[in-house]
Length: 254
Length: 222
Image 1 (cartoon, rainbow over the protein chains, first blue to last red):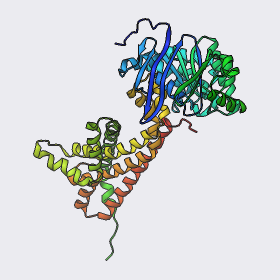
Image 2 (image 1 turned 180 degrees about the vertical axis):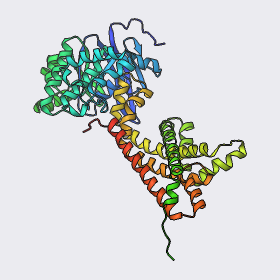
Image 3 (image 1 turned 90 degrees about the vertical axis):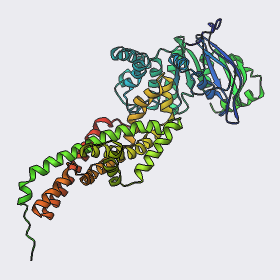
Image 4 (image 1 turned 30 degrees about the vertical axis):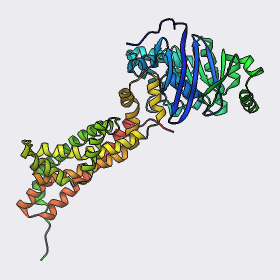
């Protein structure tokens, strides 16, 4: 049985002293982070800083060597049951969309509700239709992924994750693989989701999005959390030199 | 002294040849179906983390792919009865074809499974699907699409290999042809005719494979 942590109800996600190595490479160093219901976190930092690794630990796509990750009161461990329970509640959107090419868009959305939530085909279709409408690609439901633009594919991938009605959404550089003209439609979808109160952790370099949506911006480098602040403060008065250097680089390009 | 062609004797016994051709198709289809099953299950054990499953699979594939089919079928038909396993020629033929085709199918399908991106698997896991569900619903079909041409040409080979089952007197096209030849001494006519029949069977299979491909794998990819 999943182990229920007493007194952890307030934080939806809590990382405590998380350490991860890939062989001898120290990928995450003493990460402490708690995310409350409805919070929107933006994670940024140079490539290789561990930000993607961090969110991939939350749904156990990566394991950790030390520390503790608690999601919805469940402490992630090696038990398949806990991992299953956590993955049911945590949605994820990937940089490269990862839609299933052999299924239509609506079939992509119906797969997990039917196979994981044991929903009937009709119910799964209803929920898929609802969320495809929400990300404004209801008219593409019967097309295959390869027939859609990148922006449409990423919105379909967001809808697919939403069909599981997750408590948290993880975004792993959702706009990095997109042509510039498609970035906005995906960000708008994410902003809409944020307005609806979804708890979100977004790895992104879209600083405009961070300003507009984030409750907190977390800056990581070399596997460590270097700085954590509200967006206004983060952009106007970064404290750490590495943050300043990073912001200097990234804002010069935008 | 000229040899005068006379297809009359072949024509008279055409019903026998066509029935035998049906049996050949039956052996081939049974062999392919079981080979596909062995192929899929074998990929799971071949790529398993447990060496208890992986190593026997590798050994099986290597033994089968590096020994002659004729020896394999003789082994099943003549050697296994020493251990009390006695099979009739048809059952022997099907098992030999399945085992032989299966060993090749494992390697071919494995290539297809390995061609599926890690991102596809992660997307399935992140949605809460179990590994087996990911394999069944996400990996299998695109993997088959990727290796379909090599798998189907392997299956055409398997179909033609059924003729080796003559060696254990299984009921199939070549063995019936051999009998007609020994009855009539019309070697050219008989073997020319079954050559055409084998060509027709291969053509039929290729048409069927391409129809299946259109039905299952017509989704667009970029």
